[in-house]
Image (cartoon, rainbow, N blue to C red):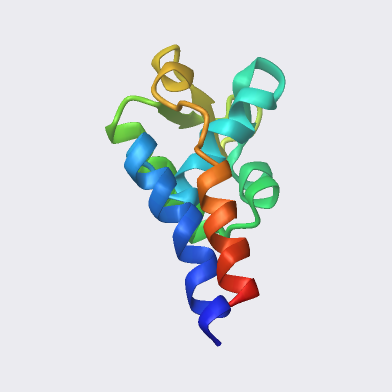
Amino acid sequence: MRVVVALPRSPDDDLLRATGLTLTEYVVPMSLSEAANQELRMADLAAATALSASRITRVVDALQSRGQVVKRRYEADAHGNVATLTPEGPGRTPRPPTSESWRRSRNCREA
């Protein structure tokens, strides 16, 4: 049971300390950075990040308030929105620390 509790927290805690973003927040700009024109429709972004429509809206709104993404109406379809990575977005999203997190997770599994 200790692994189930500790495993998800360790990498997320390290990421939060290093980037100021949770894992959920981190995957949004990373997904946008890999998309054409660094933008995705919100429904496609939700699918790419495995988040619900309501959760992706909250995450994008939080990232928009930090200047990392912009949400705007999708011009080809008045019903949808598009999230676009801002020029400041990639610079404010450094690579996550992984080795220490995974080492601690492995030690937890072996204990």
